[in-house]
Image 1 (spheres, one colour):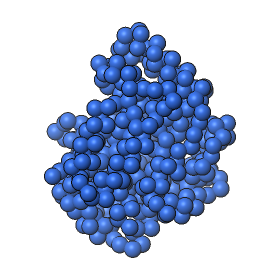
Image 2: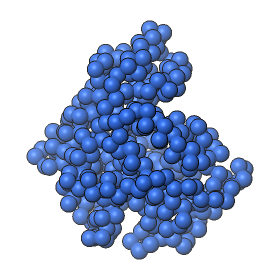
Image 3: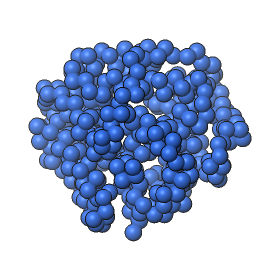
Length: 372
């Protein structure tokens, strides 16, 4: 059997998308008595109990015809807290949806209800089943304050695509460590488009496309050469090589929503494959972000996370997006850091090649307890 869970954000959708939840139950049933089955079941049970209004907007934008079934599945007590300072962004998104006015009114009512809901910090509940007793050790790696940003070389806006190709060529020619040589066999299309963010690597199977894609977002935040180089390591040596290895492994299951595995691995690559002052600065920034793992005071969170992002030099759009992810996609950002820290520990015991050899024909997901 070879199976997959395709939506990267399934954790934040299963509370209102019952057909998606049913598909995952089918995957769990097919795994039988394997330990991965119970771990995946635990994730599904917990995330089914919460509703992210931001994820609901994502889902309705993709499939407006499902709006009625989504809304019918929602109970107000499941709503994740939405700080009032973030609600206008979602209200604006709702206004642009191609759905009936009555559905828009109901979604706006849910936004108000989410504002009035009580904030609960779910991070322990999310990550304890992933890392077990080792979670405290990973969190202990946090540092006390956000580092100052490094001075970076600015890329002319009209030279972004040519700089990407130049950095990729240099990366492939000079920076491939032992065990990663086959990354040169990966084929992908480079696509540059306007949008918020930095870059995304998408395997063809998720795009329903004939070719893998490396998407580079063209915006002012992207025009920094040292940061762009670290991003390319994350996306190509991280995600690109990950999916290449998965195809070779004949994996029994791939959970595309396993962020600790997928983003943790890519973040480990970003930190360690090509060690530069920028990659180490990004590591320090993520470790500083762990200060907010246990915080329960929404005022401290809103102020502290925003100040951290501004100190790093990010524009207000990125600041607001970071805050929205903290409250509406709980655990997502921390999965990068915790997964990467787990890999740092693991690769002191075994080589990268040995680790992936041991995953051949097994389940690929956030099953770290099985791999200890």
